Length: 125
Image 1: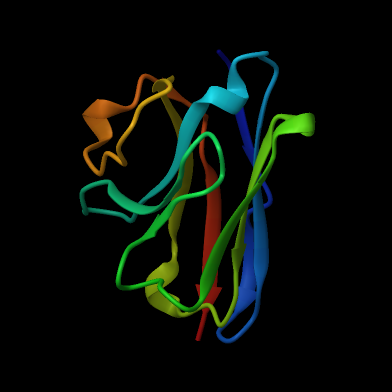
Image 2: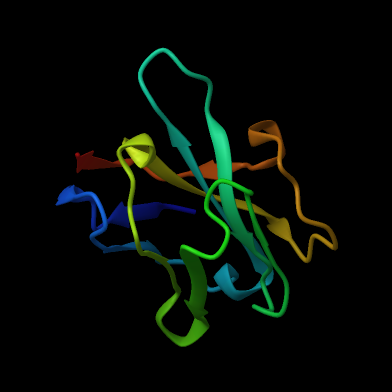
């Protein structure tokens, strides 16, 4: 499974970006997709997750009420809408996929088996 993350860029504080995670793989709809971020000198942390069915989501407290996940399984794509961005959101953002039909939402990066290449988000103050 290959994941392609895109949509990063430079934005001022308070602005918005939409990240996309696209996969060319027919089991995509069965996999949970997580977004992680890693800032310089910090560990990779989970930002949000959406289950394969799209019915359940998880958001880290730091992004709750600002970030929104959605998925279009017909396009094999998950979107992360990021609003009211803050300088502390600056990081490389990665999307990752779980095994098919995983019944829970993992927060540990090691529970994800496929990773995209990352897209840089820079928020200026």
